[in-house]
Length: 552
Image 1 (tube, rainbow, N blue to C red):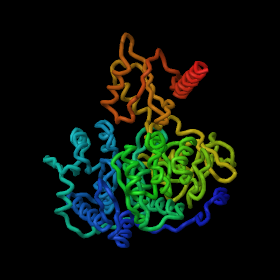
Image 2: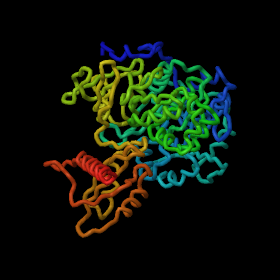
Image 3: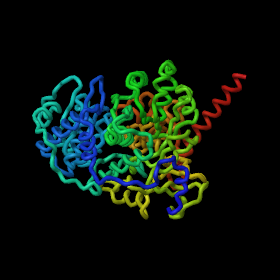
Image 4: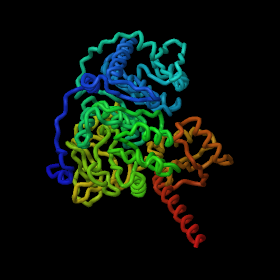
């Protein structure tokens, strides 16, 4: 677009176009290691690891993987919580020119098997406690090897399973010599539901991810090299945590304060003790802090955070306002927007002023955006009109792994079609009007109804099934299943919840089950999921009205 309306609203000092180094993610790490080898790269469980040590461990583990036969282009999964071992494995795989397959530690066998087979993964680096799931699918997925790491020093004695620490101790120390083309070589496969709900691997190149680092850096005008502390509380197996915590921290020589999972008391104590300057988070995290009974006791530490960013789900205005009160009016949560297909960040509110309520902010440097008409998808609409948000820029994916059909749907005429309905105001601020058609956002996690429905349809008592996201004050949305039983069958809500719990990651399990005689459908049999959601909202409004009348 020639008329980039948003540029006039840019913060002072932020340029609309910037230069990008032609480097791989491994070189990004090497650059910081060379500059500040003695600076602390990360703190985990009270232990400090310098950039020099971190870089050395990455090289050793890369050499160890090469000895196991890992070559450029191989797909290697990483499955574990936020921890140094995850980051060492991540950069080691990248340095070999191999491809990191981001794998959720919450996946059960069904999900794990699909992802490993779809990616054609050659091996996996996995926390020992999660290995039994890997073991159960190794034969069917063709995984050649597994490397396990442990926080307790335990080792798994099994053919084709190697110990993380032992491999590093026995490996050569020199950097691996692999030629990487940042523009073409894939760095990461990040699985997402995309436009259809069928899980697909987003191909992100080294250039995509390095560019997004530099775009974020350009937006953070008051960032100082080797003087920042990033709270790594977002799950780094997700692209948002990977880019905003891991890659960004390495790019600016920051110290990561790594917490393995989001426990609000642990987070507040980490903020109190380590005083982070950057806190990339999700609305559910800020809600948990706001609702913590002792949050006010941490007000001084919270007020020292320079940048609080919120992404992955819409940020309620009242949540941002309450957080600002806790921080004595000093910290505004800057809401942003991104998607796996864009590495992921494309928009953010300016960091030099309060966010515009309900807005995802302005496009980052070199990010072009258009609101296209919903009928043809080819006509850019003027400010104020609603259409599909389309994006182009250096952070946009190469495509979907082994899926040219879906790639052709998402990437058209040089644009990434996000599937999100949005509008832009006269100042260039963007607003998401509606989310992708059926996706559920539960506590910041993307949940795809079709996957849960497929599990339900495997149950012998199920005739028809539908899944929808219903409003939830704590999780944003929560999962509800609607089931039509087979004639003569009887079942309970608890039975189906337990059944789903045995097949799906915890965040995907329905919290509620409703038995119905039929499901709403169109004349041609298409499920009207929207009507189910509207019914739930009407029930909640009716219940709220009844409570209000009773209160009076």
